[in-house]
Length: 423
Image (cartoon, rainbow, N blue to C red; front, side, top):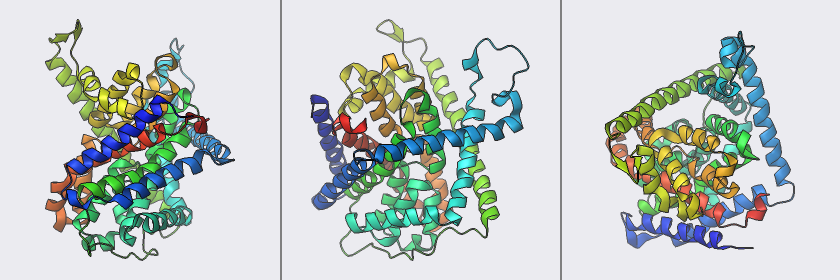
């Protein structure tokens, strides 16, 4: 049964597509077929993963697997860090909640999942999943083989690892295809961080792992569509064919685990450094404007972001009474990374946010589109294709805008569907 909130999400979907068309480099080449196809693919994927009989059991199994990984990771973390990571405490603890430490409870998951992902790639499990999604995007959305493979890899590997899969074809990609790869990379998340987000939301949201997994998958078609609207492909260009046998390679299972762990360590260090710097910068700005007040309360970056993003949150299908809190989360995601936004979402008590809003925010936050990722994107792609660095620099802020809107589009598509299919 459709409601006013479903229609509200549909309006948001139209507005998002309209905004991208307004800033398009060629408004005459609006991809009507791709628009219909991308939204249809998104809706079909959501229905397949939630509405088909038995799908809820599969997602519950995913949640169980994430819980198992968290338990196993805690064993390794406690072995290294002892009581700092939740092991036996050498003193009486009066506040158990204060024992949670982001560095010890969340970041180690990224190391384990990164190593596991590399192992599954070596065993060809993840490789065939990537190839399957690549063929889906190639056949349904008209992408070239190289672009389709990179987009599919983004779902599982992340925005810097996925271009490595098609490294041999990067010099053959058109400007539109590079932009598409950047937007999708910012609209999705890596498998390693996906599990960390699910662990953060698990205590306050049922089937958190399933929603986070679906969010990253369904945001890929949204990123493809918005990228093609903003920078359309020139007819007759693009479509570089990729040999689906050429990809990341590991010499053995041990080699995969070791290299996967090393890659995960770099991700952990990058996340830690970015969080420290951006949280400190926001705190610095708050100190600078701390003397200002509005409506009897001090002005902070968080309050300003909440006001600025209220209409944006409302367009995804959030009730206006909760749009301030939801808009603040969107602003936190853009400036302080989605990690901080997910932590804040997990800290919101159930009594202060409806299940629908929490679900929509999970989809809207699930992407690397934040200011910190701009530097990571430029650095990573500059290493892989130094001759096209200026081209990347010229498109990166547009890519950030497209990636941010892509996650909002995914939230709007989910919000437009009857709530009953999500259990």
